[in-house]
Amino acid sequence: MKRWIPFLKSDPTVSVVRMSGVIAAGSRGSLNDQALAPLLERAFSKGKPAAVALIINSPGGSPVQSSLIGSRIRRLADDKKVPVFAFVEDVAASGGYWLASAADEIWADESSVVGSIGVISAGFGAHEFLAKQGIERRVYTAGTSKSMLDPFRPENPEDVERLKGILGDLHENFKSQITSRRGAKLTTDKDLFTGEIWLAQKAVELGLIDGVGHIAPKMKERFGDKVQFRRYEMKRPFFRRFGASMIEDAVSGLEERAAYARFGL
Image (cartoon, rainbow, N blue to C red):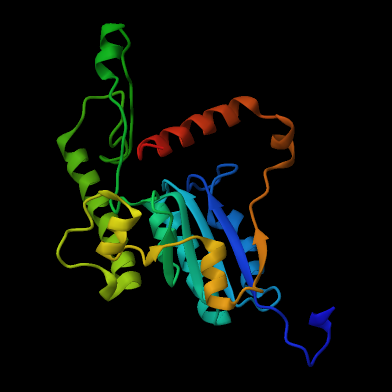
């Protein structure tokens, strides 16, 4: 009732947005700008929140989706004049750390993994296997680079060099994001952009995060013991809740499990 009485002050509210999973465009259940946009819009707009808290648990993924989500968070924060706090659970690595860097402050559990500020491209080569099986690969293109990095053909050094150039440019974008967001907090005594990962306490020393802390006590410390939490989370598609699309879900689950396994999780 208190919120409807104009001369009584309402308790402060913190909007909590959970971001858990691999970052990928168009994949069901993954983090992407299209899926998160309505959640973020409501989180920043509904009920004039005192702050928005991001709960992040992601091993990374698409650099474009990471950038789109991070940019949306900053636009909303600036437009609504609302501070943003990120709280890392198991991991905020690679694109997951990009998301965390969109916050004004980053907090983590003492065993959280953060970092991996780098770019990776992985594939396979099957041309020798095809040759042993007597299978001939036939490819016709218009454009000399159209079949770049075809896994069923021998690796072309020029293609590799071209890919490394693209990865280098993406890496520069990632470094620019982190240096612009973390600024003077970052240590100058160590190269932070090698793809290395760290636990929370070391990350504090390096300036990658602001401290070790959990969402409830930290928000009560900032906004008082009566702070309220309004939670926003991506809903699973209707049919997934009843076990439909089992094959697709199983493959997606294996891919996500592999992504987390890179960080010992």
